[in-house]
Each structure stands twice: as structure tokens, then as C-alpha cells.
Image 1 (cartoon, one colour):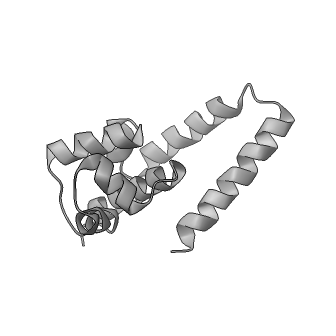
Image 2 (cartoon, rainbow, N blue to C red):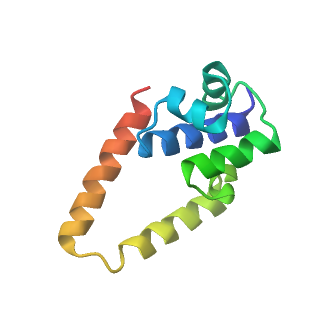
Amino acid sequence: MNERRIQFGLRVRQARRARKYSQSELSEKTQISVSHMSDIENGKTNISLDVFIRLVDALHVSSDWLLQTENSETSSLFDRELKELLIDCSDSEKRLILRTAREIKEGLRAK
């Protein structure tokens, strides 16, 4: 499998779970089959530009976020964005965000 498709599929799954959509619900919103959605999330297929746009719209994410590849440059961008996100948070907000992030990470790795 292509590593970029795998990373893309993981981001689709992450965004879907964050929205609390089932694969079936996201498939309905994007007008594709559940099996095609599964193939996308598992990095088994390429998608058309039309499906990509429908995913961005349904998941309420930016297209650049879905397309990001994991390398040292994007990792640095993620670190900076996380820092900016937390800068004006209270200690209790930071604890909640940290707990939520840990739960998401565990969920992603529990596949």
C-alpha cells in the first residue's frame, strides 16, 4: 500500500471519529459506499477530487489538513499549532485538552 494513502486514510478516520460519525454515516454524507469509505480509511484506494471535496465538507476539516504528510516540517508545524492553541487556555482547560488528546491517541492506536 501507498504510505501517503495510508496517512490520508488515518486522517479521514481521525476526523470521522472526532465528529462521532460511523463509517455508514460518513458514507451517506459523502454519497459513497461503506466499502469504498473503508478502503479510503485503510489506504487501499485513490479517490477522485469530487470525493475529496465531499470528505472535506462532511468532516468540516481543511483540505490542507487532510493532505498533510508526516515529515519533520509538518511535525514542527503541528507542534507550533498545538502551542498556539494552548497559549490562552486556563490550567483546567489544558488538563481537559490533555486528557482528551490522550484518549484520542489511545483510540487511534487501539485499531
